[in-house]
Image 1 (tube, rainbow, N blue to C red):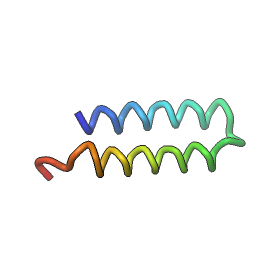
Image 2: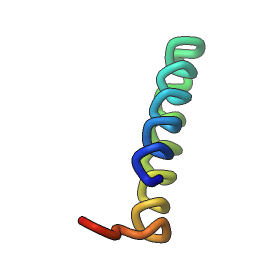
Image 3: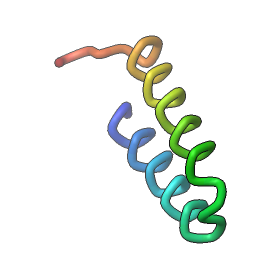
Image 4: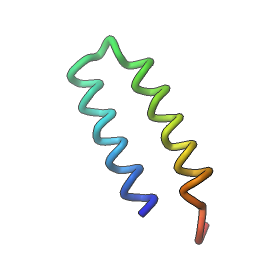
Amino acid sequence: MNFHINAIVSLIAGILILARPQLLNYIIALYLIIIGLVGLFGGAHGL
């Protein structure tokens, strides 16, 4: 399930960057925070 969350967040971030390039820094920051939280609390089971 962790893989699916990463893929969905990446897809949304990519679409937002295409739609609003001036928001690139904010989108990258939010993406990294979300992926970090998923990694910490979503569990790294099986890694």
